[in-house]
Amino acid sequence: MNDRARQKLILALDFPSMEPALQLAKRISSVVGILKINIQLFTFAGPSAVEKLAQLGPGIFLDLKFHDIPNTVKGAVASATTLPGVVFLDVHALGGFEMMRAAAKARDDAKASKSSVPKLLAITILTSMDNAGLRGVGIAGPASRRAAQLARLAQKAGMDGVVASPHEIRAIRRACGKDFLIVVPGIRPAPRSGRPGGRRRKTDDQARVASPGDAIRAGADYLVIGRPITGAPDPEAAAGAILEEISSALA
Image (cartoon, rainbow, N blue to C red; front, top):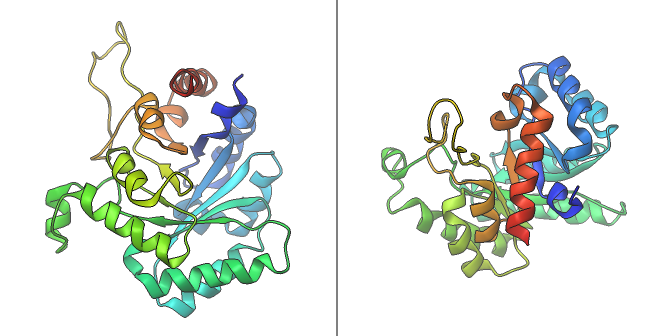
């Protein structure tokens, strides 16, 4: 197994309860680098979800998308840094510069007393949003331009990186440089010839998607993949195929 490829694969455990999430994580923890806990699973199981999953070995992406007044977000980030195994936390860039700066201050305060603390990511534009959806909430301009603008703001506020769709990777890389992390959801493996159902890629509720190989070649640091693995008849085989594609793109 290509360990470099494995470290770039984040498995989204988007389950409504702890039991199915833990069962799958146990089966597949050796082939993914990070396990992602979203707001649904965390709301159901609480911090114990982090504690149980962290024991399996991969790091934890605590995907709670904090978005509130600066002081509240600062407190939430401070609390999250005390949980075991957390390597990524995220906040919404649309919360603004002061909110992101407060989150960065909480991270920096934690660094003073811990050997390692989570990296802070800012959500740019949700991958479920297209340009029409953005106009509907009063945000003008193409998603790629707005995402790059938010990424620059996040970098200025002290974020370690952003979460953005595959379509914005190159624009963000140009705007923020090679050391700024780009974590990419909206990943859908390209259909293989001969697969039942034809060649059309299944996008679920994602509006801006790309294949794993295309995202890596564009400059993504990490890929967040859920349903193509969790919904597959053989999740281990599905993850293995994705790792092969990542490895080829890295080569």
